[in-house]
Length: 223
Image (cartoon, rainbow, N blue to C red; front, side):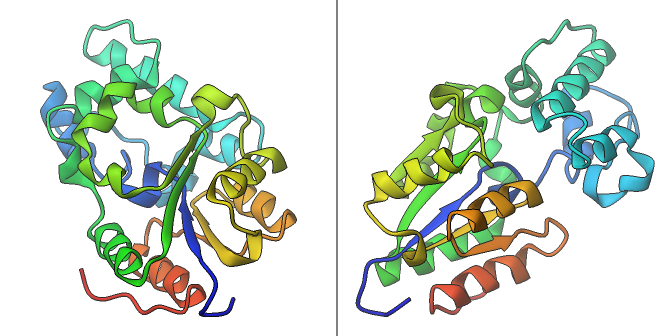
């Protein structure tokens, strides 16, 4: 990338922007009125103890399938027949979703805005998982020039058309952008269309964001 041409940072939503539901079991249990330790699945933080996560990583089930199962399980624990991921998220995080946003994300978008870097979100299930009204509780979303959500397009990453759509809406070539996602399949899909990418590590978000900014020829300031 050259410094004179427009650039963009394209982010997945989910664990890239906020602390994952795996990381906030204590907050979820408190919000749902569950005893401490009720939610034991740990996904990428303890994959050996989460067979369902392993099945998702092996592409035996989709990410949507994983969270549908977890939503049903947690719903039963609180005596609810939840059928949508948004039911779970609203109950667990609805009061103050802004509280679980990663500080590294905030400092990164601040650096991008200061440098004139365009911002975009490319999500497979933003409104499906969180509910359309969830956006109103996250004022930083107004900083994003483009939001492409497969809840409405029906085109899921790693389908090449998903990346092509966000690039088209940004009006930029793939080489002028950096894409960040925590799912390897989606990173491979981005790389297949020539989109520079960072495989986000939920256990080391600071390093992942620093790498994204390095690819954009920026340096991240401390959160």
